[in-house]
Amino acid sequence: MGGMKIALLGAMGFVGQVAARDLAGRPEVAELLLVDYNIREAKKFARALSPKCRWAMADVGRVPDLERLLDDVDAVANAVGPCSEYEKTVLLTCAASRRPVASIGDGAPAGSDRREIHDAFRRAGAGAVSGCGMLPGWTDLLEAHFLPGGGTGKSDPVPRGGKRFLFCSPDRFGGYAFFRRLAREIGRPTSAPSWAPAGGYFEAGEGTAFGLPEGRPAGLCAGIAGGFGIFGTVGREMSAAFLFWLRRSMRPGPGTPAAAAGVFPAGEGRGPFASISDPQGKVAGTLLAETVLQLGRGQGKGKGLLPLPEIVGRKEAERIASSCNATVKGGLTDRL
Image (cartoon, rainbow, N blue to C red; front, side, top):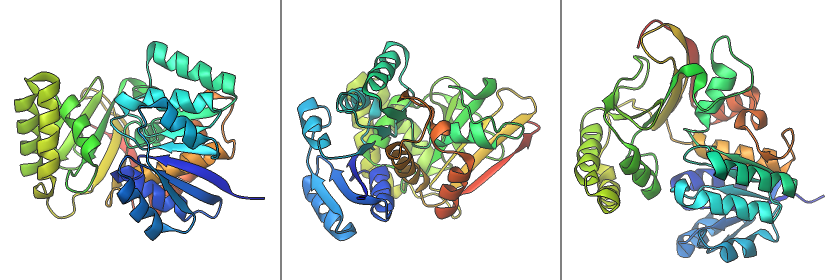
């Protein structure tokens, strides 16, 4: 019996490359199709990575481009960003082709979009997961599997009335899509738990804080994103381009993780927390790879849009963290 054939969309992005390396090394993967708009880099990467890799160019915003890629694959991993622009198209095209898909996601599809996507996959008899990165993704696993007193295996959009944070070192985590998301979402300064990585934290939607290393990274990102943000969409695109160009100059201090994420109680009260610290920036891509393989094996109850913690359990999450030299912690906090 042959192994799985996986298509990886956005293979040349930061998360995509991590996922590609993981998938190429899995014995159950017989063929890995690296899909990216930058076909020259995808071809070069595929040849250097593994003989089981192929490559293809596609504009994931065009349904015909996607459809021609899905005829000969068993499952799809989507690492394309910004997800808010492309994810619905990718998910619905996969549903129409009856292919399970795992997507990094910027956030769970909401309202009518969620119902449309969920119903499409149920009719197709396939499963899908939206949110296999850091936030959403690891924050859902932390809330479901690692909060003290938890372990229910279930997650909600905001954990038990609490908050979530995502921390990133811009010089080591993320590509241009990451900076577009940063420019779009960064808001007013806010607080973070004392156990979170030291840095400047900013509001990034309800119940969410976004953190950057203290000093130049936090100051530069806040200044540029805030300054150009007053000019609307064009200003945000300009700030993303500037930040991407300057990312190598935003080096944090020694010992700063490439990425971290956590869930913690809102307000000043005592409550449970859980966090993951990722020194090399690998856990998001490795989680995406694990999720698409689980979906390809038919893991999960029912079909449609499935909760990530239903697909990736605590043991799998611990194994992923260990393989990436990442640290998962949980405990009780007395105050923020």
